[in-house]
Image (cartoon, rainbow, N blue to C red; front, side, top):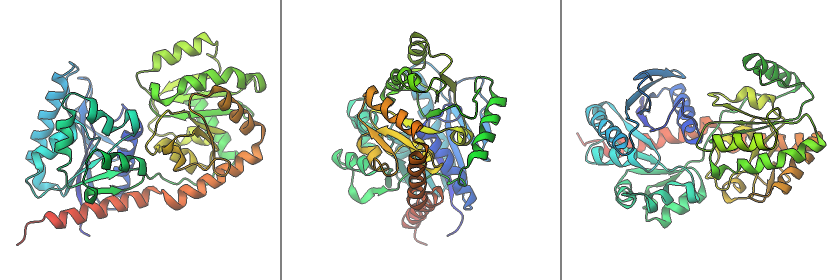
Length: 394
């Protein structure tokens, strides 16, 4: 397979980081390692941000995106369409995150060219792309255009079912699960070193080696169930007074979460440190991982925690059940059930040997089924197949 030249389009990107953005960043980096020529095209959300940067050795182009609602979206779409038309001859594939405005413009501008357009559906249920298309202004029109793409990637079986129910052609749907890099197995020395590194980087991370530490990584969004985690924490502290919870990310619920932390007097036990580009040190330092979401497609954060060998406690929802078999490689609890969550957290901290077995099983499962290398290879094979199919006959 000759070198693939790929433009990956995601309207949100670093430093605005959530699961979808990290998927694109990780895939781009791994594809580059597999000899692909990758660039990322995104939006310039603030005038002070430079138009061009390099992130993880990948060139990033930021297109105009004024903050004025409505006009910002239109301006971005116009710029994206112009960019794709200008550069389509030098691209072997365009891969677009989310079935929204970027996807609409990419398909509209390139559907009659030889450049394959591949869309990636993100999220599921109420926060997923299919629900957005059903309810947003012009959503049904955007759906009709997205259905003309050459291929649509579904990262979970649940998202694939939603796409089918929305009328997408099954022949165009490709199930490619999220993939994560598999780190070397953790140990007590690496846990200690990670805690020291975090503490030196940010003084609020003052963790003694015997401090129980739980982490969450992802968007700070109401659908992530983070208020439930905060509600559970005072009860965890009754059993383990030094236990700390770190909620890493950014999003629209940040102010509400801070208010709840202050109302419960948890300022010294629950922290919102903002965005991390690389969460490996945080996962190395942690004792367990929480994912109290109301809905998920296939959570990249959950996969990363499992790959790191952490015991995970997640909500009992379809997206999480694809990855977690409760009692074998993690634990599941009912949505918004703070009592059940606090009980599981206490059990994990109280029974370190059982927790270690859960983490080891999780790591083994992710290594076997969800490596980033395999995910990148499957994407590149799909792009190459579409390129050959659309290549003009000589």
